[in-house]
Image (tube, rainbow over all chains, first blue to last red; front, side, top):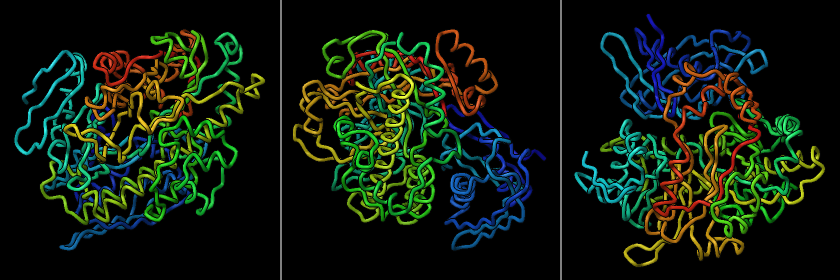
Length: 140
Length: 473
């Protein structure tokens, strides 16, 4: 199964991410976001962060989850390379997500070519019919 | 969609459905065809539906699709009835441009431009995830959020003259750092005094055309070949976080029902949350002013070191692109305070506005419109007509026409560097892939944009500059 697909967008970054479950799709959306800035497949596993977010709905949860990648980049110089142990809970009063991010510190080994400033709701879609498809636009 | 032609460069979407006012678009036929391809006009219509909007929802000549508001969107709201929206300001709060003039001529720096660029590269941190050289404490950062460029000047970065030639004198009053989240502060600490990446750049340029000798002279530009320096950057991660935080607070407080676009979430201006956003946004504006002030100072230091002197390197002006402000405007013949949102638009106050410093009160303010990396940029002057045309606003830049993805497919950074080198433009960047994404071919024609601004009277042409050396983040 394809993990994600980068879509054309005039001014910003846009992608679709796929998964058999919400967890898998969210995880692939994180890799898609990273791919707009660096090649995540080349990042070594030398550091990890446990990420926890809450959202009033799935859309807000996705927005905040992907926002963690930018936050860790800017405050911990952390480059995401892999996402593991994703646990997502949907409830009447909102959603929660936990995940383990693996990656490495910024260094000359890696080229960072893009700057994702923020994750947006613009054209955001969360579709579930047997499998999950997410669509996200990020501000660049 | 019904689109009425008012005159050659003026178009209107008449009030319909939930629109409270008409939407007006300033564009040539060519620019209009461009925006029809995306959601710009739809977004401009959505803005016209917001509560308390006054006169019209305006769209500048360089507009393209944004989130909530289009980029190049201008709207003013009644202070009692109206709203304030983070989507009407944008994520990069006070993204803006600063222009310095020098008394050097192109021939003075031709042999030194590689060295100048290399030194600026050393002095000004740039690129994604690149931290600054200044180690800040949380308390100092909070002081900066309140004092803006004033803090920078007090701490040895530049002079008080620079404040006179900065929008808001480099300091938004009413900023309150206690409404800026810990997360935003954390993102702000390592990034003060950094250029960032993406479309942000630092250029040295030469004047290639002067359209209005008298005004140009007041702005400090007198000769063809005169060297200028342009700095384009914003409030970095701190501003982005403030925008994200308040979008979330507003959704949680007011819900998202009935919004045509979730990024249009807003709060009444007079509500607690509306006021808190305004104060936090003002703090982010100040961060960006301090940021550009520090970078300008380092540029002067480099010129001094490499060329022997930084004498005569006076600031022409510093303008905000993404901001909400309380300003006085005439509504149905009566002057009153309104909350104006400029998202990807530049203020263009004409002569006589009391907000302007004495130096520019008789001419109107300088309006700086950068082109894309490696292409021409323009200096314009604000007009009296802009007041009734667009709440004193005009375009802010070139605006993309091609996706980054497509640009990466079509261009290579190293080739762009070589092309520019053949035209006598030196380019350096932290990433060649990043250069390809920002290829001049991926942007609209800035010449056409300033022509519309000039013809309509949103801002009039003063001078054109071309780059000699470009540093891209």
